[in-house]
Length: 501
Image (cartoon, rainbow, N blue to C red):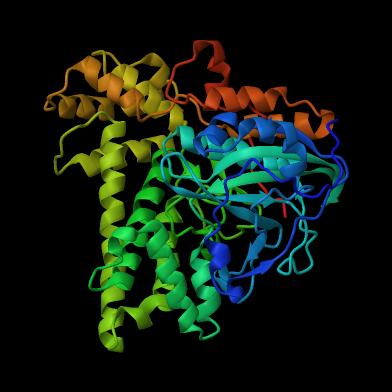
C-alpha cells in the first residue's frame, strides 16, 4: 500500500492552477479543505488525460496518492465546495451544494480550455447535511468506467483523472472500502446553481453567475444584444443534442435532477446510470426512481422541464417587460423540442445507414424500435449487426436471431433495403459509416457490476482494467474480446443501480 501521511504543500506542484470560480463572490461557495484519509493508494491514474490537461504527470505519479486523496493540498489550489439548489425528482430543495466533493481548482488545458479538477468523496463540507462526505469504492469505479466510456463513444462528458482507495471504510447498508474519485469537467455549474440564488431573490448573483458562464462557456455571446436570452438558448441547444446522443447509444442517466444538469452541455453525475440491454422505452434502472420519471424515453421531456426551471431564474434578465421575457422563454423551450428531434432523427438515420432524408424515415425508424421492443432485442447489437446486413443482400442471421420471433423483422428489412436502394453511398462505405456510429461495445451493466464486486470483495482490479480497455475502443470489432459485447446470461442481468450516497 502506498501510504502517505498528511503533509503541507510543497513549493512546486503538478497542477498549473488558475482558479476563476474562487474569484467570484463568497456566497457562491464555501472554502473547505479535504479531510485526510488513513492509507491512500492510487489504483488508477489517467496519464493520457493528465497530459492533455498540461499536468506534471511525473510529479503527480510520484505524489498522486497524497494529492488525489486529499491528504496533500497541491500548491495553487483553492479548495471549495460549490453552493447550489435543485429539483430532486420534481421537488425543490433550496440548498444542496457539494456535500462530498471539493473543487481543488482549474487548469487551462493544452487546447486552451478551462477545466475543473474536483475530488469526490474527500470529506464533509458545509453542505454535507447528515452525510459523511465520503464515497465508496463501487460508485467511484462505476463513474470512472462510465465517464471514460462515454468519452470514447463521442458523447460530451466529465472525465476520470484518477481513483484512489482511502484505506478506511464507509458505512452504507454495509461496510465498504472508501475511495476518492478525481473528476475533470468543463465546469461544475448546474441549473441548480442558478436556482440557488434565484430562490433567495438574489438577482445580482444570478446575473454575476450568468456573466461568468457566458465568459467561460459561451464567449461569443458576450457582446450580443440579448446575451442572457442567447445564453439560455445556447444551453438548451447543447442539452437537446446531448440527450439525443444518450438515446442513440441506449444510455439512461437515472437521476436527471436540475442539480445534475451542467450548463456546459456535458453529461455529469454518473450515479444510478446504465446502458440498456434489450430495448424498452420505459426502462428504468435507478433504485430510487420508483415511478419512472427518468426512464429512457422520458429523458428528452425531462431535459425540457429542467430547462424551464433554468428559464425561471433568468427571465428577469431576458427583457424588462415581463410578458415579453416569458414569451421569449416559451419560444426557446419550444425550439428545444425541434432541435432535439432534428438531432435524434439525424442520428437514427445514420444508425440505419441513411445519408439522405426522406419523409418516411421517421416511420421506418419507429417501426424498427417497435419490433425491437416486442421482440426483446438487444439495442446495441441490433444496430451493430444491421451494419453487417448493409453489405449483403441477405440478412445477417445473427441479426434476426436477436428477436424472439426472428421472422417478425423480415418485412422491415425488405422496406429498409428498398430505402437503401435510393441512397447514393456504395455498400462498403455505408457499412463503414454505420460501424462508426453503432458501437460494438458498451459498459454492459453486468460487466460493470462484476468489476466492482471483484474490486470491492477481493481488491482485484483486473476486471476493472479489462473493461476500461475494451470500452476505450467501442467502435472496433475486437474479436478477442467478443464476450464483452454479449448481453447478460440468465441470472446476470442487472435490474437496479444505486447512487452510492
